[in-house]
Structure formats: C-alpha cells, structure tokens
Length: 122
Image 1 (tube, helix red, strand yellow):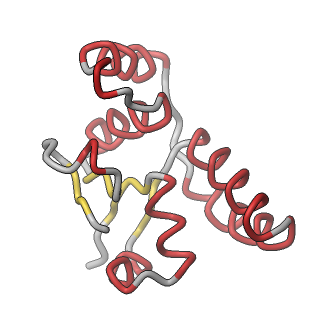
Image 2 (tube, rainbow, N blue to C red):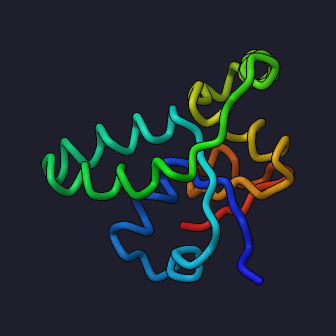
C-alpha cells in the first residue's frame, strides 16, 4: 500500500528536481495546502518558467486539502509559540494540517527536523 504524506513546498521541489533522497516519495500519495501550491508556482515560475510551473502546479493542485479556520488558528498559535524560530506561515499551516490528516509532514526544512510527526529528508 502506498503511503500518504503532507508535502511541503520543499518536498515538491526536491521530487521535481529528481533528488535521489526523495525518489521513494515520488510514488507516495501527496496531500498539500493551497498555500504550498502558491509557493510552488512562484518558485517554479521564477526558476524554470511558466510552462514548467503550469505543468507541475496543475498536476499537484489535485492533492490540495482544505485548511479550515480552526487549522489556521492552531497553526498561528503554533507559530507564536515558536516565534523565535521564525517559522513560515505556510509551514505552520501544513504541519498542523498533516497532524489533522494523520500523515507525516514531509520536509527538508531543518526547523522541523526533530519535531513529532515529521519525515525529514534532505
């Protein structure tokens, strides 16, 4: 059975770039948030152009899960609790969404390396 992970933007970029350490995740079931899709589109647009950005974002947009208001609130509480770490809004929302969904938060962001419910891969 294929595993499901919450892909943060970093994870999408590494899969797209063909990072060997992310190869096993390219066949997993990703879920993500619209905020990650926004970041992904911007990064791909900037680094690879509109055609590549459209191709990947159109593909991954099918895996977006809704972030209800209570998730946004919990994520902002988490961000405030860890304000010295300067976590991004998007990552905080994704981390809480992953926990809500019962899946691991897949990231290469070292700020999340030793946190519960994280699959940290570089």
